[in-house]
Image (cartoon, rainbow, N blue to C red):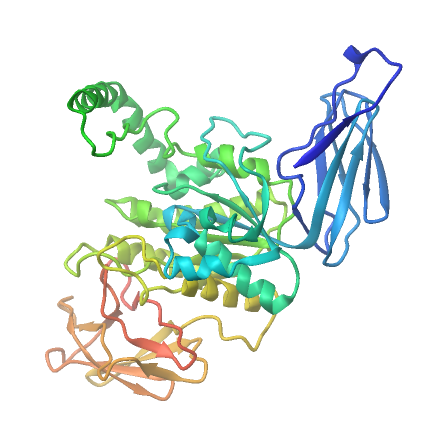
Length: 495
């Protein structure tokens, strides 16, 4: 919380406005270490503002629009400290401030999935008591324009009372980093279940890429259909209320103000965070982009979103770590999920990105697997290698690099093999192979040192191999460190 104390002044009160700061700048917050962390807010135009923190005393003046900001001198991890902001009309006291690393955790429902619904939730929550982990949950908000502040319960130290509603993935990620690095970790959780990536991308970024125009075309169709869809929705609600049904209230259709609105969540839930210094991002999303033709341009969209966020934070090297879609659904389901996984894999071409493969810990019957512990751990391993430069850390499972033809077989080469390849099943499952007829059949596979040799008696002239190319595949290839191989295909998209 913030304590605001009135200060007696001789100037007419109408001439001065109280100094205000956004909700992010509040008691129990974590400030990013080793950078000039920004503190900002509003006041009357021309009003003098003084900021005191950790022995620093910084002075500034609100501009003609009433906005002011200062950048604190870079400092190492530590705390707790007090932050004091003072002007002629009032002062703000912000207590229990830690300095450490701040990560933004975003995406859809699997990132938002709370600790209270994770695997072993009762046991996990019972032992949470770590004031060096702080969580800030951003309230859901759609906006047509970029906002300057967010709503929410504020910063909360991780305790058994505060953690049940927090992101399980983000908490397990933070727990590993905090235990390993021995510094405070702050999580800014800004996630909303059932939302597409275009809602989290700025309007400028979407509009500047002609390849992403299908986003606007599709939304125009939604808006055109909205009046009729909304009328039908109102009838369903009326019938639902009259029936006294105990089933869930009918869901409203997409339309103005809906969370699928392109840029709507960027404006309401990301833009207000961008002045706040952070160490990087973790992201778990893709399910909502796996339908119809949407998967076909997910790589372009996702890469655009990552660049967009980095631009907004004015740092094109900020680590961006994400979760590849887990196994889910029936094997016979179409391959839209495989296409999204491939798009996520391709996104690793952007520097300082890392991917947690989860093809082995999903639930074919539930789009929300409860094993968030391993998801958080795998993201944390990626953070240690990419954000913290721990070169010895094996943070990824095998990633396909290239294939070579050897008679009637294909030899596959991988990166991130760690101490070697191995299979968790007696037979290596998940591989298919095809010849010039493009008909893929189940393949036999054997590990040969750090390669996999794939063949089938049905294919004498192989030209392409796929692995895990299903919604919920049988995938058993790992490295010795226990991290699973990413699904992939050697054939191009037009094959």
